[in-house]
Length: 250
Ligand code: PXP
Image: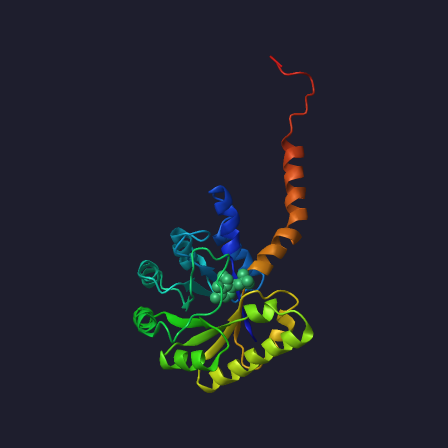
């Protein structure tokens, strides 16, 4: 069975929009797990735009499946990761202005820093996955760096339009997965996957895990909306002041 890692970053995005206490990513993680999530994924960004340090520590204490921490190989975040000890760390590139992670890591350009980060995480007992494009040279570099897994970025596939372009991107993912599996790497995928485009992805032999966030949180907002409004109506109704005479001083 292919594992589903549910990325709950955007639950924290809604909370941070008001710098409030709700919605709580820990509550979202519990409900996602009840829904069958095989793991919980969060990205502790250097700009802390959604998930906060405290969330990661609380999730470590409460997630009963697997906690996957997406992170840049930056000193500050590495220090937190070795304290938290997630089950897995997924190293991703990070840019301040991006809306979300854009493209995979360039393992050939950042070999020394990544090697040091991977060693540090391994010493802390954390498995390491590298978020890369479906490219043979990157896969070989991941193997050489002794990563445990790769996460193939599916953004190019998700954004492809038209059958020929989609089929081309899918084929790149298929070939990359076979190559990585031959080298003994575990293969995960993620980015831009939704209820439609995932159907074709799961036909690729060798994929072990998918990390999906935005489309699941988006759907949760909609399918949960009716109940949320019904509950608010019922609270208002049940607690309303029913005496319609003007109140003193009104
Ligand atoms: N995998 C990685 C490495 C990511 O950076 C992200 C986005 O945070 C995801 C998966 C989830 O992507 P999406 O939110 O588009 O499902």
